[in-house]
Image (cartoon, rainbow, N blue to C red; front, top):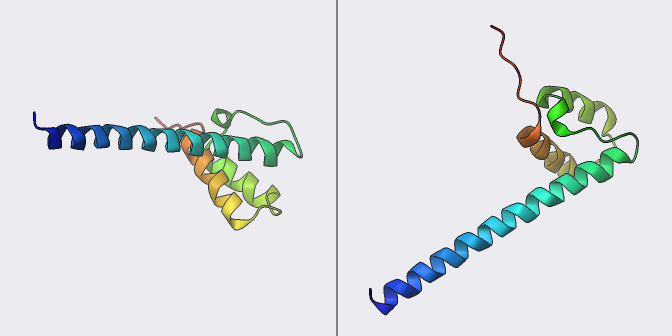
Length: 89
């Protein structure tokens, strides 16, 4: 393997590792936002307890003090982590 290929592969690996670290940090920040904003008024429920559709209702109804960015981040987090809606049989 040539030196140039080795350098390219090393850069690619480190770039991927950095991307994974950034994604983990973003997920942690979203979880912290969820806990901080929601726990200000009530017990924090695990996101898996309710569907995303329910959370949308709750955030719209009770999240009036959230900024647009906080609301977006919070809903993104809940969409990813909420209980999956059950399909009728």
